[in-house]
Length: 288
Ligand code: C2E
Ligand code: MG
Ligand code: MG
Ligand code: MG
Image (cartoon, rainbow, N blue to C red; front, side, top):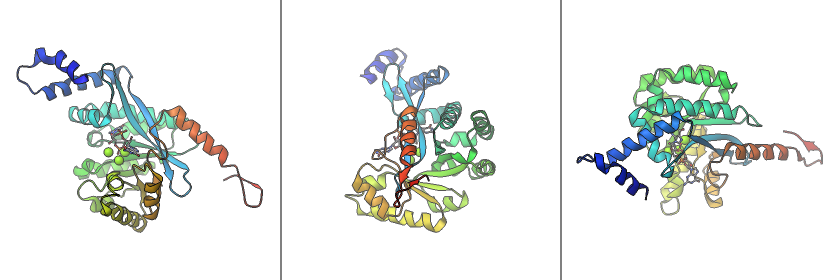
């Protein structure tokens, strides 16, 4: 239906040019407009401590409700924004909006924000982050930047920017770990604080036994190198059991919560806050 509308709309410009290219151009223009009109939204997905199942962090995830097509997946529009360079102002908006939101949360959990390669290469990233933290009052140690290995191809630029941000207290997470190339050397070279293990290892787990073995290996790697491990995409109690047995410390997935509006996350945090005042074994109230 959406495609049909797109075809009707752009057939007049189609002088043999690739239809998909035209659709991307159109989406790119619409995305630019959405950004300018402040129509983009963020959802926040909990990251929990596997042992206690308490929320220790939340990842900000972009959402775009297109006026004609409805919700467009970030898997579709983020690559378009990356190719066009729009990801730089878009990413800046995400950083500011997410920091502003996290500063209001009832407990001081961490905020994870995804970063694209173009943002790391752009001169403006450090001042953008400094401004976002200063204007919202969010403590730098609460901000964790997630990046995939593709970000790191421009090694020296990435290292410079990361080292500068690290001195502020910002932390770094290697996202979708295990799907790219030189994972192990990158871990050491860029001194990541955290590894997020790609959900494909869990999803393929039942019919591909090596998925589970890889989870174990990465859990061990994290312990050895002193790097936090987060297993992504935990949907079922059985998958949680696999992750726990693999020795991963943190988990994220629909089992603990889907990406949610900020007020829902705040409610979850408040709820968690009151259950903190639990009765200890000696009958006294323990406030942790
Ligand atoms: P990601 O950073 O790896 O984010 C995790 C994705 O897994 C999210 O998809 C999340 O909704 C999904 N997910 C979480 N738990 C489960 C689960 O239990 N099962 C399944 N099947 N999926 C789960 P989402 O929100 O569609 O985002 C897709 C990707 O788009 C992200 O992958 C990230 O690479 C990119 N993205 C999203 N927001 C931003 C942003 O603000 N900036 C940048 N640069 N990229 C973003
Ligand atoms: Mg991520
Ligand atoms: Mg990921
Ligand atoms: Mg991803």
